Length: 544
Image (tube, rainbow, N blue to C red; front, side, top):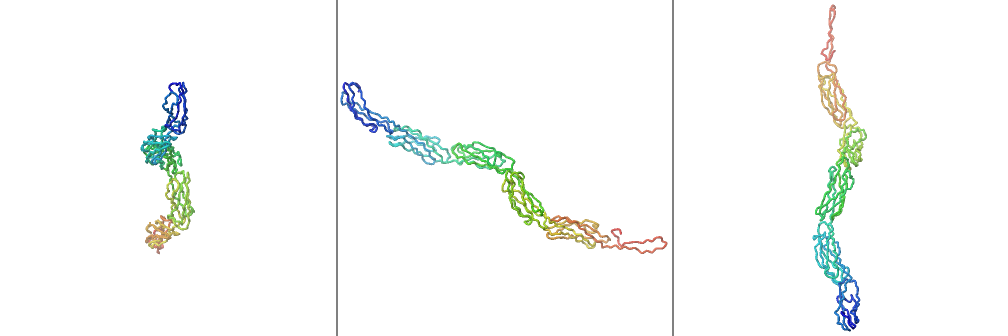
């Protein structure tokens, strides 16, 4: 009281519930005395501690003076401050772009005795207003509950994007909770961007190869890719090892990697190396490795040799060669094909031969069949197809079989009377041939001259399968007494498998005999000598 009294002041005390209820304090009814000469006394009221988040609460302490000279006091108010602060949380949420909406829980960590009212607003981050609908709203967590959901629309698009975020902010406008920290909504893209490193084939002499690196849909951000080459069958002598970083700008879909290619003179075949990529920035996936195939421009030429073989050799060896060694085996399929020589002349052969890497030749052995038939030279073909290796298919080779059954040509020696008009000279072979034998014939003067026969130049043919032909030469009849005379018939084989003949001789017998006479003579004894004429009845071409 404001001044000491000379008598005790007795006061009845009673508590009265306000915003604080009987769960917050113990209802108290008591009497207290301020002794005479003093000015105060304390009333002790139990306060109840709980775990409920509550606002500041009050109850009333009322007093009535029952003895003494003091007036009744005005009511006193006890204010209870809460020691259970309510923490508000806006959850971090991850949502797929195609979900349509995202549900963001707004929670308090303990139930409150009053409604908790929170103003909500979204704030753009890496996700913009094309990715979600800007949302401003107010939500209430009812007293006794701990959460409420905020529903925010999410926009689905077809653009490849990285994971993007926006913020959900809150302000507590009513209740005893603290303002929450911002929540983050993370939008995962449902438009995955596939990266591809192209497979490329390049000629060894091109100088460089351009390898496209592409994404299948434009991205909203740059796609950065680390590129490295890895040796395969192609080594560092075939291309320049390349390590680089390339960028596909946002909104575009490709970039080129340029890799130097090294040309050499070695026959190598097609070789490969790998181009690997790792996406270091952007929302694309790492690509599958690309393959660069280098085609060799040093292609060896395969040759199947032309070979001549005697019919009696038993086999023929046909070399198959390349003009420069290769770094890989060259495999050639071989097949024989009938020409003028048939399967009775050689054994049909189908085989596969290999020219080993680093070497230049291999032999094909083909059996040759000997017979007794006069055939002339005959041919068959050896064909090849390259089935493995980097060589071109060869031109066909030709095997020529020379016949060892050669017919002998004879020009007969013939005797003819000068008056016969012609002489028939047989030209013969000792065995039939499978082909025509053509012989050029010419006469050559001997003791018989051009006044005794007609110079003859002609060509005769002994048909295949036959053995003779006649040459007819005119003989000149005269009235001159002559001895037996000769001229030569010469021959040259111009077609067929026969040898040139020895010369034939035509002998002309004379049909003009010369009569010799020794005259009968009478002479006188005294003449000293006698002359006896010796005569022939016709002049002779020679001395008699």
